[in-house]
Structures are given as structure tokens and as C-alpha cells.
Amino acid sequence: MNLLHINDLHVNFSTKAGQVRVLSGFCLDIEKGSSICLVGESGCGKTIVALSIMRLLPENAQVSGEIQFKDRDLLILEKEEIRQIRGHEISMIFEQPASCLNPVFTVGDQIAESVRANGLCKKNEARDAAIELMRLTGIPSPKKRFDQYPHEFSGGMLQRVMISIAMASKPALLIADEPTTSLDVTVQAQIVELIKDLITKFGMSLLLITHDLGVAAELCRDVAVMYAGEIVESGCLNEVFRHPKHPYTKALLRAISDDGLRPIKGSVPELTNLPEGCWFHPRCPFAEDQCRLSKPELKNGIRCHLWKKN
Amino acid sequence: MSGRIQTSKMFQKPIVMKPYALELLNFIKGNCRVMVGCGLIFFLFLIAVSAPLIAPNDPIEQHRGHYLQPPSWQYPFGTDDLGRCIFSRLVYGTQISLLISVMVVGVTAIIGTSIGLISGFAGGAVDEVLMRIVDILLAFPGLILALVIAGLLGPGLFNVMLALAIVGWTGYARVVRGCVLAEKEKGFVEATRALGGSKYYIMFRHIMPEVLAPVIVMAALGMGGTILSASALGFLGLGSQPPAPEWGSMLNEGRTFLQLAPYCTIFPGLAIMLTVLAFNFLGDGLRDVMDPWKKKRLEI
Image 1: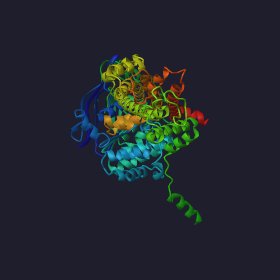
Image 2: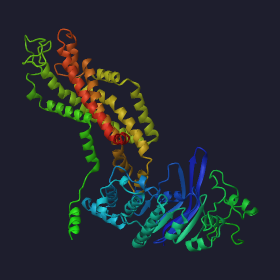
Image 3: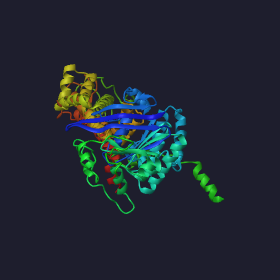
Image 4: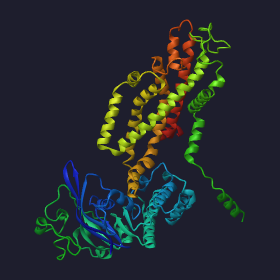
């Protein structure tokens, strides 16, 4: 039984320049207690997947397909029902913790607020529950820190606060949108450790969005590599990272190889102006005539005409 | 061992401070203008509340044979052309002026802030309609529009307050809407939405506190402005009707005898000036406190 089942998700944005297809035929399954990672360059539609699940896309987005969460289709739920799911059964943490906290309230207030919103305890107990959460996420001297404002915290500590807020409801699914991108490397490792501990402790599922393959390898069992709004390769993370089959995955992994950086030439195509055939072929070193003409389907977790040859 | 005792002592009594409130208090202490403003306003409210105790005479009683008398012990600020004690009238007039300013500023600030919040947060057609209404109201000079409205409604204290309120909310709405537009794009709004916060919850709990600082400053400055406008309407005969002791109408009544008995106009004029000045001092000082950039500059 899957906790989250995304089938044939399409997202279009209507802009002044016309319809822009940002996600096409996206499919993903997350089992209960498993962790999956979406990787890819910027502008590949990773965050759009997260926002579609939360139904937080801007108003000019058209969404079709289905997103099943615990037998309910999130896309057709009433506004009030989806609001009950947000922050209760699905929580999200963001890239910029500093901007995600309200600067005029103390950190403790904001955690307590999340505790209260979940109706887990009375007003006077919320403070204790919040301090407990702060302790759980490894914030030192939580009683003192409770009454401080966000500007008195460092980036890593703020991310811990965000995680406390997300954990208040003990959600079934945690969506982490680049949780470590704005942090420095030593702090990154601590936050990764913390998330890892929490998901095993509470049996949560994790949907991680990142372009840091190291973080992905540390946290997730499965991986889906995205390119221009599509999955190009998916499967068990160990398998995919050890033996990448799709040329894009290979290029991504080679870009950070031990013997220096090797950037992938070119950039992600504009979504309004996608190439004929395989969308990766202009940047693909192995491209053949077939790749320029017809678009490959996702077969056995690979979207490539040539993977058997290579 | 002794070290341990010390630490336990330190943790026994955690010093809980509300840093911002404390800072505010310190700043008010250090800021001369806010001190003077607060002191004067407190003094005025004291006068208004204890008017019957302070005033030596009845403010509307006409003392026959004591017309246009210069200041004396019996009539500290002299008498007007009908033999009424100017000092007593000024003391009672404080009640009217403060009532008008508190009511008008209170109502306009609440209405303006709500409309600004709704307009900025809803966007689209709602925003468009509300802001065009604001544009229309702002296209008229405020006092003239208030004059027209008060004229149409007929003279009287309540109608003057209504007229000033109809004209006054636009400024708050504009400022608040601008702040909301900036605030609603911030990360914590989306984060709250992702945590399941409803529209109204985000609007009132998260965005409103962010926009209150300019509203408070505007309200403090607006108090002075309102007293001035109310006096102007009173001067033109639209305020509270005789024999009520309204400062503006007192100026008007004394105008005829400006050369003969200048104290009829000087003292009401001074009262208006002092009150407006007090609120302006307070408003200016509060702006310094609440503007983080200015504060930083002061610290340097």
C-alpha cells in the first residue's frame, strides 16, 4: 500500500508568453516509511511536484492527473479539506529558514502555535510541548531559546526550528525542499543527521528535493532524476548512483567526480521551446538520429533510446 | 562545589525579558520629544477628565456686565463678548477636542487598516475597486471634502466626526495595502500556508502585526491633524453648535474683537497649537522608535 501515489501529473502555467508545460506525465510512488529523492538541475520542476502535492501552486497553474494520499485524491479535495492535510499529515520544510519565520514573533511562539494548531494540547501545555520539540531537534538550552526572535538564531538553528514546527503534528509525509542548500557544509551534515534520526524515529516517509547528490545519498533509499519536467531515470538510489544508465544521470554524477568538476555543457532547455525528440539530446554526447526524431518513453525506470547500447 | 552552587543560582531565576518592550521604554526615556509629547497629552487628558474640578466658572453661563474683560483672578483668561469665562470654556473644550480626535482616529485607523489588509491580500478585482475608491477620495482636498460632507449632513459634533472619518481612512488603507503587498510575498506566509493556516489566520495573525508600526505612527500624527481639521470646521461654524465650548468656534467668535480683546482668540489658538504640537511630538518620536533604519543610524 502506497502512502502517496502520483499518476500522470501534468502542470501547465498560462503566462503572457503562452502555455508553459512545467511537468508532463509525472509518476511517483512513495511507500509508507520510505524515503525518495528528486534530483536534477534548477528549473527541472522538482519544487513544482512538492507544491502540487500541497496544492500551493500559483493561480495561473493548471493541474491534471491524480495525487492519491491515503486513498484521497488531493487534487479534487475541497479547500478546507486540503488545509486540514497541510501541516497535519503532510509537512514541508523550505530552503530559506530565515525567511520562513515571522520576524515579529519569538521562535517559541511560532513552534507553540503549530502545536496548538494541531489541537494536540491546551494553551498552557503548548509551551512545554514546544520546548520538548526544540529539545528533540537538538536546539541547545531550549528554555532560553524559546523567548528569542528569529534574528538571534543562526541559519542551522533556524532550520532546526523549522523542523520542530514541521514535526509538531508527527506527519506521515515530510517534504523537504532543499533543506540544506542555504547552510554551510558542517551544519548541512548535522541537519541531514537530524532528519535521518527523525524519520526513523517516527516512521515518516520523506520526499527530499535537492540538487546535492551527497545529501540525497545520505538520506534516501530511492531516487528519481528529473530533467525538464520529466523523470528520466528512477530506481533504488544505490543502484542508480553506482550504475547510472541515463546519459543525464551519468553527466550529473560525473559533474562532481573526484578528479575535478565537469559541468554538463549547455543548460536546461526553455520550457516554452523544447527540442524535438528526446529533450536531452542537444546536450547528450551519445545522441543519434533516433534521439532527434522520436521522444523515448519511460521503460524500466529509464527514459532513453540507447541505454542498452551504452 | 562553590562553582556548582553559583551555576544553580544562575539558573534558578531565569531573567525573562521582553527585549522589544524594554528597548521601547528606554528609547522613550531617552527621547526628549516623546517625553514632552507624552507628558502634554497626559496633562490634557487629566484636564479633560477633571474639567468640573478645574474650571472656576460654568462654561456656558453668561455673566452680565462682564463682557470682554481682560484676564483677572476671577476669569483667568478673561471673558468673551457674552460674558463667559474663556478659561472654563477652554477646559471643557478639551473634552470635545480629545473626544473628536480619539473617535475619528480610532475609527479611521480601524477601517483603513481593515480595508488595506483586504485590498492588499485579496488582490485582483477587489483591490482594484477599493483602491479606485481611495483614489477618488484622495482626489479632493481633504478639508474641503469634509466641509462638503459636514455641510450636507448639517452642523453638529457627530456629523463633523462622521465627515472627518469618511475623509480620513484613505491614508491608512493606502499605507497598509503597500505593506501587505510587500509582506505577503515573504517566505513565512507561504510556510504558514504549507502548515495549514487559513487565509484569515495568515492575514490577521501574521501580516497585521507587521503593518501595525506605520499605522501607530500615522495615528499619533493623525490625532493632531484631526484636532486641527475639527477646529477649522468649528471655525467655519460646522462643529458642535453654540453654546458648546469648541476651540475652533471660540476662535471664530473672538475674531470680531481681535483688536479690542485679543485674549478671546489668543488662548483658544494656543490651546489648539499646544495639543497639535504634543501629538506631533509623539508621532515623530514614535516614528524614530519604529523605523529600524533610523534607529540603526542613531546607534551609530
